[in-house]
Length: 88
Image (cartoon, rainbow, N blue to C red; front, side, top):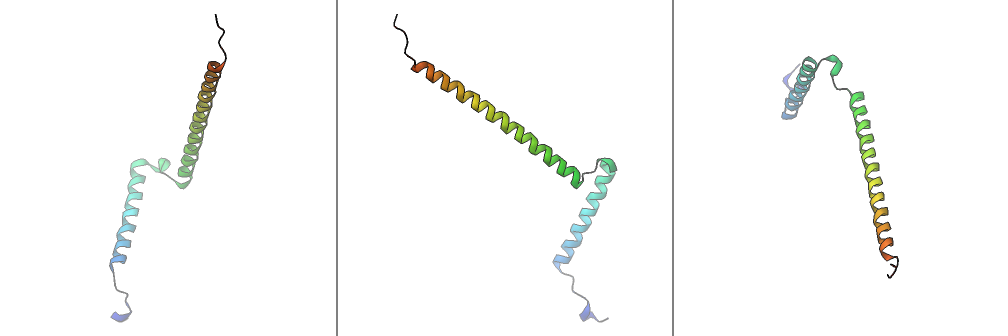
């Protein structure tokens, strides 16, 4: 094998290597610190996202309900003011 057939090591090759080693180190560190049973997984992340979406939908529904109640109360108060008052 001659020197001409060996691909040169460039900045991107080094960056990829460093990134790969960093990811491996973080994964190993997470496993050691958190433990096997509590490691984040794609399934766990997806479930957390579903729960967060449901919570946001519940909050949005509650806000819509409150706005509807306030609108109805304001309309009722406005209608009550428009009714002719008996003159004493």
